Image (cartoon, rainbow, N blue to C red; front, side, top):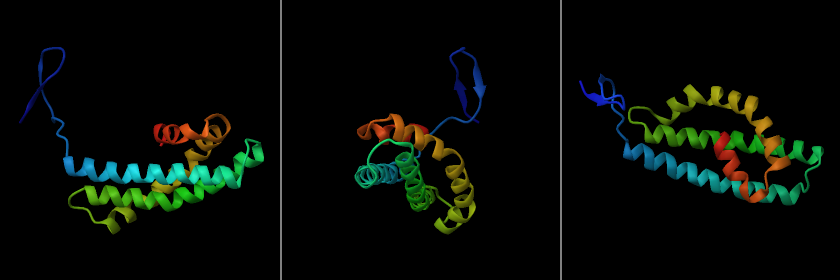
Amino acid sequence: EEKALRCDGVEHAEDVFVLDRRRFLVFNTITLGSGFLFQTWWYLLDGWVPGTSMNAVLLKTFYTQLFDTAVIPMEQTALALATPGITVSEKLRQDFLPMQALAWAILPVAHVIQFLYVPLPYQILFSRLNG
């Protein structure tokens, strides 16, 4: 049983954080890749649906939600590959529908804010902060 020393100077028996380098590398590589995908997507989308009128913003939000539907399994696959003892199909079966439901419940509001107020070059940063 390991003990961790907290800032109060008292030893506490608890789990000590250990960085899983493989998980960190695999997940962040996939997440970085999906970030480039989204940034490219938003530049293309801004060309197809220009402007920040409410109609344009809602259309961009709808198309981005469809795009999210394709990317979420990729990110779930990355988590499965980075987690020993779990298969990709098991991870998708376990987490895809809850993740998708959460994405469709929360992200449209974030996308409306993003497309109305965040300049295009900073949208990936905004997206990663709320995703």
